[in-house]
Length: 311
Image: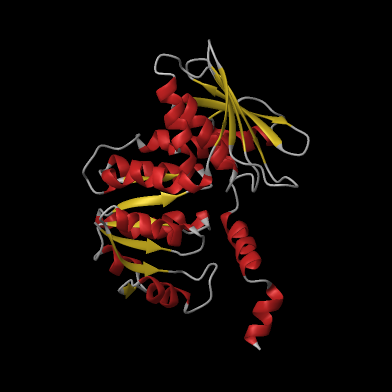
């Protein structure tokens, strides 16, 4: 495939690049909106990595690539950035989180239903520890999981939801906010009656991605190795993006972690009641992507440093 990288905000574009190339695909161009990085960053990135083109127009990029990787950390602009590729029928990998509003998630699902190949989300959904757990338990399903991580409740929290989703599988029906001390706890319900729990939010010391999984016959604790996350993710999604394999999961199933996080936000606002993923209350809440991107930019380029550079 000829692949374009859209928005270079995070560490993911640089980390994915050698893995994409090792899989036999070519990154032919980059586009950066400037939400995080200063002018000239995209050109420097392209020169550093031997990428031929720096695009200034997403429709122009869409005409030149077979797939686009959308890496921007302002998820409020996800639909805006994705639309030129959807209009051109170009396959897309959408980095986590897919979006911070239910309406945006439904828009992507509509594109997928129309035939656009769309995949993405958290790498924890496909991590080697989840795959190995399923291999060790071919006849035993996960009945309950307690999963957690540190960091932003949505940008990082979606990793916890996705890890739980990988262990228990698709079929999340509702979520409720349980409160908590320090971190927040959220309980998720599956359509078949199973439940799980995530613990998320900032901590004084960074916690690893972790899970305790219960079956009828076993209890097992997992710690996910960060060095293998991206290779496992790309092994799961690249064949689909290239049209060489079916979707690893339907897009609506892949977006259940984001919808569960939105249902949990609605539940927190409404006193901790169970909120179904299709409850109208989910449409009334969101996670602020613009604010997250601004904070991410200020952490990368502190205001004092940027002010000095301007002078």
